[in-house]
Each structure stands twice: as structure tokens, then as C-alpha cells.
Image (cartoon, rainbow, N blue to C red; front, top):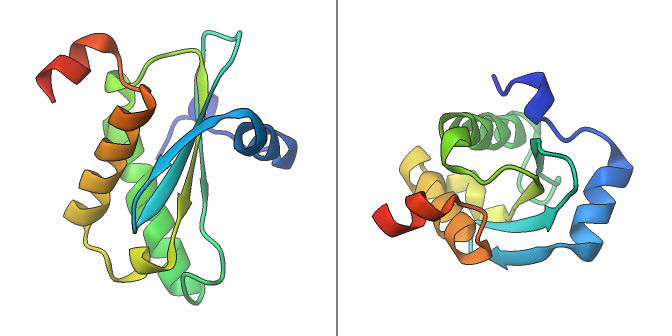
Length: 119
């Protein structure tokens, strides 16, 4: 489970990140990143009904949350991130989503400097 201090929860925060943040994505997901004044890193996930029924949406969210939890140490602090799953994510494997999230994090500059050199 993603620790509470690293969760983006409020609708207005999601909206702010989507409107003002930089984005990168591929066929599986889109990532929006917005630098903030707080030293915290917060991550949010959005999976619409276009992705599938509740069981499918919850599986996609669980997998994305686990990947983000595992990679928290690689991400730069002081930013809010929103991952939005696209319909193709419903058929994606853990490895597919992992690779897609890593690419999006790299494209947006959300990774710490030492992590981007090793990737």
C-alpha cells in the first residue's frame, strides 16, 4: 500500500495537476507532473470506466499503485504526479505497466537525477 503522505486524494488536486502539469504518455497510460512548494511527493491514479468494469479497473489501479510504491525512492520530491490509465491498460501485464510508468517518469523528469543516469 502506498503510504498516506504519498497519496494524492482531493479532486481539486487532481484537476490542478492535470491543468498545470507537464505530461507524457503512451498507449497504456498518461502521466501528469506538477512541481509544488511542499517537500512531499504525492501520487494519484485515475482509471475511468472506459478501461473496463470494476474488477478490471481495480486491478489496474492496484498494479499501478504497487509499481509507484516500489519506485518511490527513485522519484524526485516536491511534486504531484497523476497517472491516468488508458483502455489498453486493461490487457497489460505487470511488466508492461511497469515499463510504461518508467518511460513516462523518465520523459517528464520526475525521476531523481542519479536514477535517470542508471536507467
